Image (tube, rainbow, N blue to C red):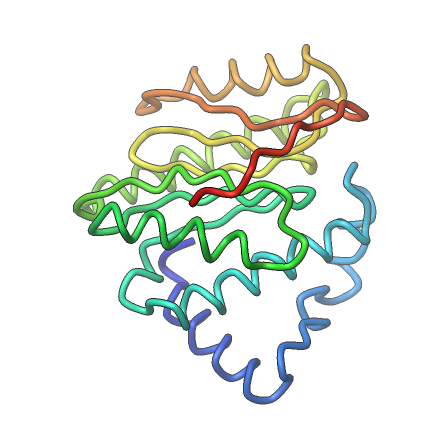
Length: 203
């Protein structure tokens, strides 16, 4: 995700100026709509999640552009997962605060690390891990891969999405752990129909 951050930033600036925050364009073409409609979260929620991601990036860029490029986002059913690196603990707190200001956010999961950015080599490894895992999920007929988001940061795989049952979550986790370079797997996947307890915003 990070290689396109600059282009996205420029796009956000242009979109904010020309559309006044309107983000209907994120729905994409008909093919994107068809994919969104087939996800467990449904077409409407998928659009809402895209809007949350767009708005978070816009607000983060405005709040502190110097740390914007180091943050990656995944959103599922209003749950905002943040990963990446920022220089200071204060920056990590700021990232959470910005997340909670975005309309539609039900939960902010802040897994942003404090310290130096990852090396190019580690970023390449992380991208390869994500790609391999996505390929494995697509190939597994017992997994509805379209319902999962994957983010890899420093060898740690973060999973978000909606599973049919616990057995499916276990299969996805097993696939992730079997990939070379994976240090840990952290799952924020929920089971279809199960309620999710919502935490209070961070101070």
